[in-house]
Image (cartoon, rainbow, N blue to C red; front, side, top):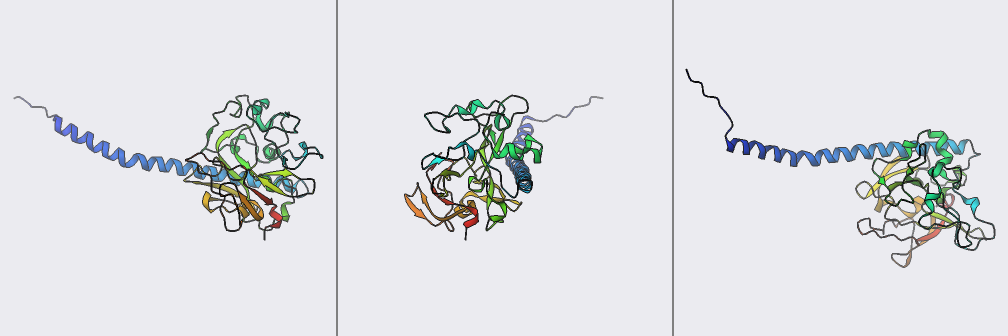
Length: 293
């Protein structure tokens, strides 16, 4: 008795392949969205832990928030001298600090380097006890070798920036703690523990800050990011919903992108477009979380 073995015909095989291709086209975006959502959730947890770490630091420091190199600026510095240098940068050109490219390589242990300026990340590290919490799963390593994470074991690296308007101040003085942002996410992971906005030195005590509208801050997840708030909670904001007042600007802000003054209570910080790579470093105004009405 002759038995005939059945097999797929070419047409049947092509139909199966087509079905698999259709399913893949449907499911791959779903998997990608699920992966992105998982990264966003992990990032939110990091922001929460860093925010709580900063609160514990203040509790052990007479209610004062973390500082970020303010003491590096001489008392005789002129107006607009930055008060908050980027970690590891050298002094050049007679200035107390320098924020030019290349200086980051002077901190082989990143923000944990003994030679680095005082910075927020090194200050709160003892309270979080893990470098991994300083790194967002939604950020890639910085492509600039001067600022890219160091390969030295135990080196500090971070994907977050602290609100420079909130450094070295009484934590309980903030008028709206549940609305005041202290931590923001950045696009890349670097060895630098920086701040944005950054306060500037004025001999008369003026509290001006700039470096506010940057395309590489607050855009990692669907044109938004998770933020840590000074009362200890963390939440997601679309960048165009973050107002200047959320960073501590309490009166008119001058926006470089518009060339005009705007109300910090109603205007968002989003004029930079990450898709166009626009940065408006000069956007500035008086910034103090204790004075926000």
